[in-house]
Image (tube, rainbow, N blue to C red; front, side, top):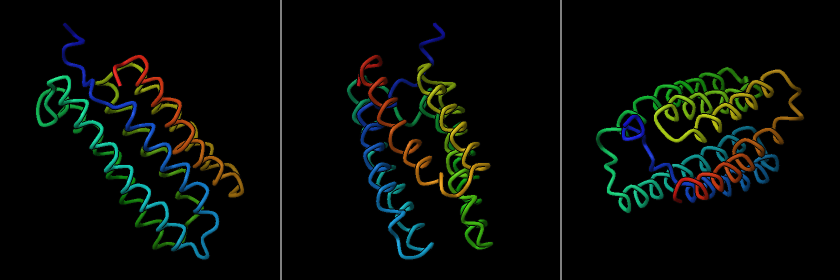
Length: 173
C-alpha cells in the first residue's frame, strides 16, 4: 500500500540522456574563453537536460497510466522544486559576486538535495543518486578549483549514466 503512493515515472532513459548532455558540457565548458561562456555552456546543458528529462518522464508516465499533475508526481515536484530554486538563486548571486569557484559545488549540492527530497517519494535508487550528488558537491566546495571540471563531469555525466541505467534496468525504463 505504501508503494502505491510512489512516483515511479522517473525515467532511466531520460536520466541517461541527461548524463550524455552533462558529459558533453563537462568536456566543452573548460574550453570556454571566459567565465560567462563557461556559465552559458552549463546553463544550455541544464535547459536541454530539463527538456529531455520531462519528455522521458511524460512518456514513462503515459505508458504506466500515471498522472504528472496529481498524486505522487505532484508530491515529487513539490519536494524537488525548492532546492532547485535555491540553486538557481545562488547561481545568480554567486555569478554577480564573481564567486565562480563556488558554482560547481553549489549546483551539485542543490541538485542533489532536490533529487534526495523528490526521491523520498520515488524508488529507492533516486535518493541514493541524490546523496551521491550532494557528496560530490560537498567535495567541490572544499577541493581546489582544478578538480571542479572533473567533479561536474562525474556528477552531471557519469553518475547520471550509472543511475539512469540502474533505474531503467530495475524500475521499468
